[in-house]
Image (cartoon, rainbow, N blue to C red):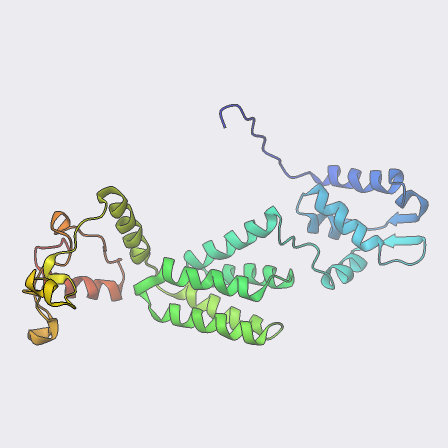
Length: 281
């Protein structure tokens, strides 16, 4: 990267976009053979979002709907054509990833209004229902987690439902799920816990399983005290027996930090009552 030059491409201004259209009409080998009148350009320019390539692609789409060489471009004509086509949503381009990002961040940011708007942008662009549902399924665990475990159930059911049904009815199911996820309390505690755990495994290597936790299917293993002194939780009060479950070198290591929400605050209290000072709940 040190030898690379990075350029930021800014959006075109209105005058620049109008010049692009005029230049296309006058100099393009195919278009200059037609009698094209740019009666109104507001819709074309607005839909381009300041992107010159998108402007010309949309313009070409409009032109191709005319059979005669006499062509008049109006805002009404532009909107009629665009509403019947999905070309403006490039599922492999930068805009695709920008809209998906906005959708996910709106849900994570607890804004159901923005979530359904960006969802509508994807739907109108012909985005695959399974792609949208899959992203919400991941988010339900990563960004909501145990703050509202029902979110994962709904997201999973949504994935199954839209896979079976497809468009156009799938849009309703996607909307229900997006709104529910956006309106749910948030927690990334489980996501952070597995990240910490995997990093710890990489740092500490293949630590031995405590002998009392080992499986002992053979006589030899039993003679080696595999499983000895293990306490079966259900034989104790409140179905809990205080004992060590982590490798010896990691005892007391806290990987799961409950999030700050009603459900996980209750989990924090419960775990603190069980473990006392062993973990810093």
